[in-house]
Image: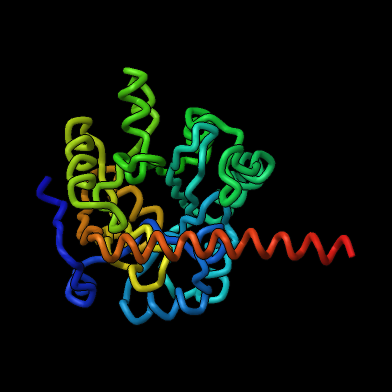
Length: 272
């Protein structure tokens, strides 16, 4: 695809022509990230880019960023985890739509992961999540489709049933947390299915925020998402190497352990 470039984004140069947005990022509202809203906002300002905060089954980070830093370009978003433990990126035209979807579908259906004490997911099958999100005109994306655990491609291939693709609006082409070969395969899949593409850092540590971005000339959220639907956007991003992947994984695990310890401490204090 001519609109996808694998290289480290030059944010200042790109911002002269485009609205530059990292469409996959995490704050400490996610169970596996410890980035404060202030540090997050400061990094965005220094890069001169916008963002979609897509915390795992949470929206507090997205709401807090928009409330505290109203001048930043923020796309309302969430990364929902399905019953099958597969991730889905959802982007909304307004924060009212994001809150409505979250309060009605995600919040009442969150639960602890049965086999992984460090994380959570929902009771909702991914088909249900995709279907309900369509009621809010959400832009629905499969992130890191070739990721071994959370990516959906292998599951669909194993089932020999790709019919769910008709419910998906786009595929993440460059996830900065994934290896080059996995991103290329995801991009190839998107091309074969003629799906629009997005790019995001999937940052769980502040250093990687902005490593992959989506570009559009649209200046408002609805226009930005619509430009992706029409394939009038571009994606520019770098991919993971061994050292950056090791650093990110280490940070994620430390944050998960921190959260578990914090919850245990709270339980002890409440019991006493």
